[in-house]
Image (cartoon, rainbow, N blue to C red; front, side, top):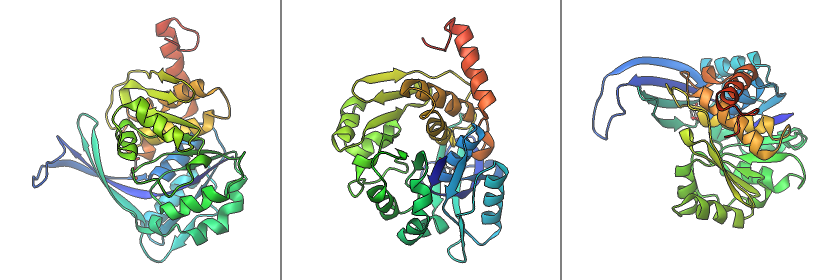
Length: 307
Ligand code: RIB
C-alpha cells in the first residue's frame, strides 16, 4: 500500500499566450477548474498505475473540498482518513499555462496548512504500515518532521518531493530514502550550482538517494554513482503535475523493479502527463505508460527501451 500525506488543491487554470511579467496584464483564453495539489496528484498518479493508495490530508467543508474528495474516491483511493475542516477553506492554486506548456503557480494552502502534528499523530499508525510513503512540501514542515522522526528505519520507503523548495534543515533527512528535486529545487535547496555536487551535498546530509527530475532530459539518479536516465520525447501541452506523475509512478515502481527501471517508468508517466491539460485529468493509466515504453523500445530496437 502507498500512503500519501500531503496537499489537495482546486487548481484555477488560465491559459495565456505567455506568462505576464511583473506589472503586466495579458489576455487569458480560458479559465478551467481542475483537481490538483501535489499530494493528491501523486496519490492519483499511483492509483491509476495500479497501486492501492490511501491519502491523508485535509480539505475545507466546501464545494471544492467535496469535489476533490469525490475525485480521489473515483480513482479508488482510500480517503477515509481525510479530515474536513470548517476553516480555513480548501487549498487553491492559481495557475497560468502558456501555449508552450510552461506554467507559473501561486498556491493558497488553506486547509493544507492545517495538516498539523496532531492530525499526523492520529493517522501515524496507518502511515507507518505502508510500503511506500510519498511526501511533498505543501503541508507544514513540522508535520513532515514529526512523521519522519517516528517512522521505523526499514519501512516504509520514503520518497520526498521537495516542492515547493524550502529550507530542509529541520528535517531528519537520514529517514528519506529518495529525494526528488527538479534542477531548480536542487540548487535552491543546497545553494550549489551543478547537479552532481548539489546532489552529493544532500547525500552527505543523510538522504539515501537523489533523483533529479530534468524535464525533457529525463532524470538523473545520484546514488553511489550518477546515472542519466533519458526520457521519451513527447509533444508538451501543459507541464502541470508532470513531476507529480513522476513521483506517483516512482512510488509504484520502486517496489516492483530496480531503481533505474523504476525511474524509466516514472519518466514515461511524467512525459505522458505533460501531453494533456490539467493536473489530475492529465495523469496516465498503466496501459498508457506501458504502451509508450513499448513504442520507444520498438523505435530504438531495444527490448526494454534502453538507449
Ligand atoms: O504540482 C502541480 C500542483 O502544484 C498543482 O496541481 C497545484 O495544485 C500545485 O500544488
